[in-house]
Length: 162
Image (tube, rainbow, N blue to C red; front, side, top):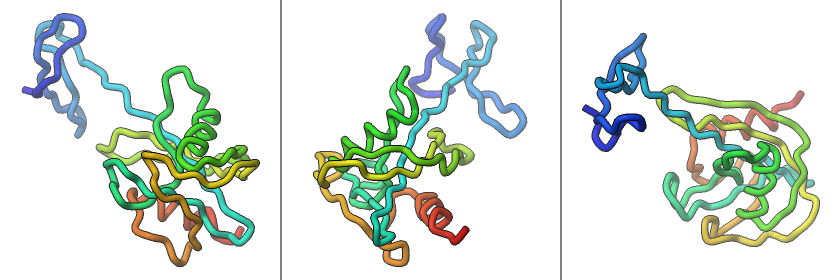
């Protein structure tokens, strides 16, 4: 049985069911699979004129005290690019424009799907927030400890020579 997971239709506690190497939730009363949508997040890679990448220190889990590309979850009904711009503004105080889609990333058994953009600063000054108490630029060769392992790969790929 799955703890604290109940069918939205009948309230029955859900069971786990294996299907082609995936664990799915199943309602024994309604006799149907219960789908859980993955979260969708976005982040933006912004580099300054010296080639340093903008990172924010996280004040929340996951990754408390480590650094990440500015980003977060997309709200229901929000346009993805607008969410990326909003997250940069909320976490860094900077207004940016989106210039390119870098990629879409997902990992097995990790719910968030990550949509990564490249952005360019339009205005503002670095202003940390309660969620990101420090915001700084770093050279790729001298990155601080990162909250999310895939960030290093994203940053590395973004700075590879074309």
